[in-house]
Length: 445
Image (cartoon, rainbow, N blue to C red; front, side, top):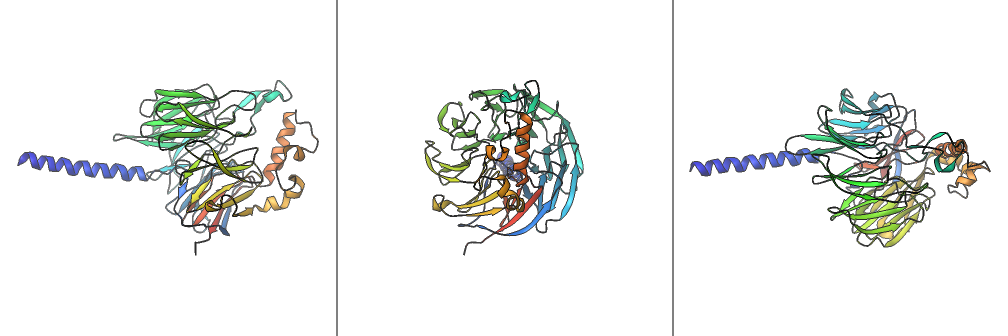
């Protein structure tokens, strides 16, 4: 009888701890780990609910929890904005641009800044809990990049938009915040204290956001290598090298895992499908000299991902990599798409934001443009599309400074490299015009 009673106690203890663990795990929110949201049918963009102005370009992606939208800006602040009204709740100042997106766990918001620190901040009050100092955050740079002039100048890659977003790994003992750094390390720190638990060194900056599956963390870096590590120890399980060549080197996209396959885009320029256990190639898709910086999303056995120079949202078979169809935007598609119901949403570099009916094979869509796009389109775009040569107006593009000028002209359009987030039938995204936008979605009739 005593043995049965003890067994019963043990049974209820295991049930309780199991439920507590799963509850904690469900509280983790990361903008790249799950891009599918609740929704029904085709829900096109409707009217602007509100927009919130920051003092810098927005490259990070919003995240929403408990009535608050969190987003970083190039002005150095992380903002907490009321989800319904668009009014400021609090803002947290760092000493550098915030190109990392935020993650949430246990009422703590985690993010990184170009000031060389990763932060944990109270999600309700904006008060700092801890900060972790890396060896420095910076854009990926090369001397005389791509043969541009002057040949002795250290040049930042003009297409390096993001810093790594922290992810949270839970086991039955502790929680780890794991993130990449410009110093080439993947760091795992105690999520409560910021104390370093382990680090894994690569040969170049890591600006992609890692992804977790069971006890493995997957990520790629500017060294062009994709890694699988043990979450608890940081020990390498396997690695896969993409091609390294001028202008086509590096992994900036966060990966997606589905049915034992890890999918990620690279600049070499392919979308890869690898076996999660071995790292062996299952297939690779040739993106036609287009980089893939966006995170793939899979729904109803179709994989969707954006491309750069072909301006496309691709729809592929996730088992074979065969293209089903493509939807063409007006500029580079770096924004990671979001799906709700039968609708996919994403932005492009020309300042357009799209919704697309997934049941229309790319034929039914709605487009909303930023005010700046409408203002500058005629002078900046070529037949309503991005065209680097056209925007350069016969400038010598072998000179690095001339390329910078063209990028600044593009940014005036309100380029969207931020990935949208959906909450309560409202979609949120940031823009290079400095605004965080909130648009209502039409409800299915």
